[in-house]
Amino acid sequence: MKNKQYLTFRLHNLQYGIEAALVQEIFPLPELTLIDKAVTNIIGILNFRGQIVPILHLDLLRQYSVKSCHLSDYIIVMQWEGLQFGLVVHQVNEVLDVNTEAIETEPFYELLCDSDAEFIAEVAKLDLGNIVLLDPKTLTNQLDDILPLIWDAQMQLDITTSSSNSDVVQQLGQDVLQQNTEIQTHETFTSFYDLYCFEVTPEEKAIFRQRSDKLRQSVESLQVINELIHLAVIGFENEYFGLNLELVREFIDIDNLIPIPCCPNYIVGNMNLRGEIVTLVDIRNILNLPTPPVGIGSPAVVVQVDDIVTGLPVDRVLEMVELNSADITPLPTTISDVGEQYLQGTAFFQEKLLRVLDLPKIFTKGELIVDEEV
Image (spheres, rainbow, N blue to C red):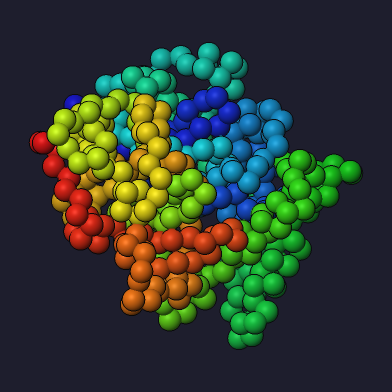
């Protein structure tokens, strides 16, 4: 038996999967630049750190009208045979190890209620439900009509970014996109928001644009002297905390829970995660936060710190962000709050304070003993 890893995600009421090895990055949906109306399956293009990336939407591939996009949507950036492209999704779930014996190639059009399903490779029939597995080759075939447009815009963008005047490079890069994409979708539609975010508020539009501005920046300009830190933002009540993504294995909903007798109150219990016994540890105690009950259906983050693999129950998982280490303010050496000694520092996220957790310190000096054999 052989397993293959798939990143799973949701669009409307269907669960999809794409080979995890093809995925390059995941980020919240930004403002996109529209393209010619003749291209019916592309929602727009994006200047992604100096690379022009076309963005697909499965609704368009199924010849449906796109329902309104929202701030909570994500883009998954993938690469197939040298071609980089993105896909709009509603929710990113977990990476699953799928046994090849669970993958079927029998007719599955009834899952989509239509026969236009060329972009589907197979269906994985799992205990948690059917996962529609996408065919990356067919997805990239949808881009054939706009490749000349992308190459032309990329060439001019490369010329622009080679300018020695770095102060105007980013704005010129956006101008190149606008000049090389004809917005001809409908006489009354003039923007990405008119077509795909028609319920957007001015405040939400500003956030979409901020995301686009950030994604246009090159890696070199972001790194400056310091390094980039990738964080998963989680919520405990109204507080935001950041977890180093290098320590995060996956995001889950607790679907089984076995209490462990005679354990400290921070040990919630054990859960069977696809055959692996994982202990759930509630870190809210040492952070001096309220500890409401944890049960079936509660979200959790599976992390690995050295040899310790454990699940951290959370109130919600917000998104993945990228911060420059210079943007994280170190904590003072003299700390009065016990919980703050387990933080690497603080930063701002969506106008709220984000506390960056020091997970290794929590598990080595936080008096947390995680023993799955208790």
